[in-house]
Length: 364
Ligand SMILES: *Cc1c(COP(=O)(O)O)cnc(C)c1O
Image (cartoon, rainbow, N blue to C red):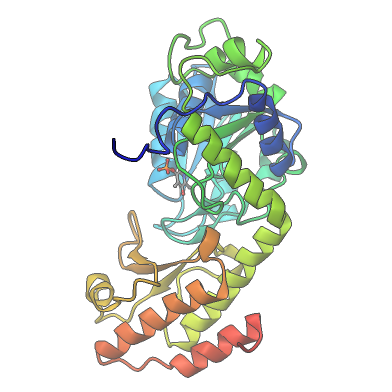
C-alpha cells in the first residue's frame, strides 16, 4: 500500500464552522454586512456578483483600470445593465477628474464598480474619494478587493462599500479555491428581485435562500473541505499577525521597493500615492525589452514578471505581496533586477538600492 495521501478521505468541513468563517471575514473587512463564501476562485465571485446584480434597472459607471474591470463591465452588460465604462489611461489609476466627468455625463447611475489595487500594473485607485462621490449620489459601490485585501487598508463600512469581493490568494498567501463577497442591504435591494437569476452556480440569491437565510450551515452542494481548511489557515495566520500589521508590512515593502528601484536608476510606473503595495511596476530603459531582462534575472528567490494588460506589457513587476512583503524577498527582487541590468550592460547602483532599503528596514 502506498502512503495515504493527506488529500484523501478528508473529514467534511464542520457545519458550525461556516458561520464562524464568514464572521471572521466580516471582521477583517470591518463590515457588519452579510458575508457569503463563494466556492471558486475570486474571478468566479466577481462574475457571480455581476450576474446577480445586473438587470435593466441598473445603470452602472464601471471604472476600467485593467482587464478585470473591462470583464466586469461586459458581465454587467450581459445581464441587461446599462454600463458606462470610464477607462483610465492604459495601466494607470483612474483620475478623479475623469471619474467625475463621466459621472456628470451618465444619467441615473445607481452602481459604481471599480478595482481597488491592481496587481496587473501595480496601481492603487483613489477608493475613498470615489466612494464619497458615489455615496453622495446614492449609487451602490461594488469593489474588487481581491488583490488589495490584507495588503491595503480597507474599511468596508466606513467607506460605504456595498459589495466587496475578496480572496485569500494574493496578500494573504492562501489558496485560490475559495473567495467571498460582502453584501450590504442596499446591494441586496438590487440583487433580490423577482427576476433574479436562480438555480445557477453564479446566483447570489441561491446562496441567500439556501445558506444565509437557512441558518448558515453546510453550504449547498458538496463543499470542498480541503479549501475550507485552507481558508481557515489563511485567516488564522492573518489574525495572528493582525491585519493592521500585515498592511504595515506591505506598506514598508512597497516603499522600500519603490525607493530601491529608483536608486537603481529606473523610474516607478505609478506615483507613490497611487502605487499598490503588493506589486511594484518599474519602467525599463527604452532599449531594454522586458523579456530580455526577465531572461537574465535567474534567481529563484526573486519574483519578477511582465505587466499584464494594455499599457503594462513594457513594465517589469516586482512582487512583494503576502509572504514576500518582507526584507529578504523584496531585496532578492531588487538584486535580480540589478544583476539583469548589469548583464545587459547598463549601470545599476545596487549599493544605493541597498542603502535605500536599509532606510526603511534599518541596516541589516
Ligand atoms: C487576481 C485578481 C482577480 C482574480 O483572481 P483569480 O485568482 O484569477 O480568481 C481579480 N481582480 C483582481 C484585482 C486581481 O488581482
